[in-house]
Length: 78
Image 1: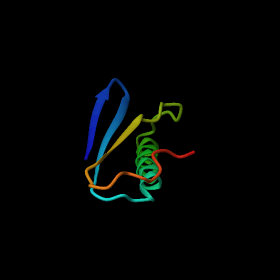
Image 2: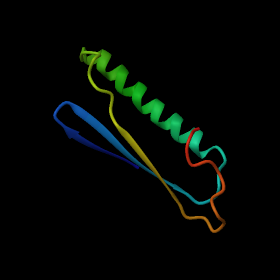
Image 3: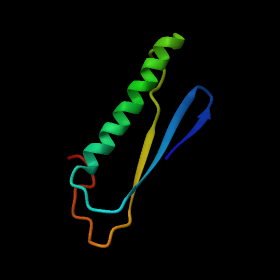
């Protein structure tokens, strides 16, 4: 789920991911999702001739784990 809020010239993304099982690659997948979103934004800036010093969007990703066993995978990149 991606929810976009525009304020001035900034576009921020709030992503909610539902996860029903422990996935050891979750932290890497979140990084990939965020990287793809930023690259999409950069490509759109080039098409619209937006100055490249424009701030990149803030992306906040929340993973809601609803599985039964304890989450034992990484929670952040170290």
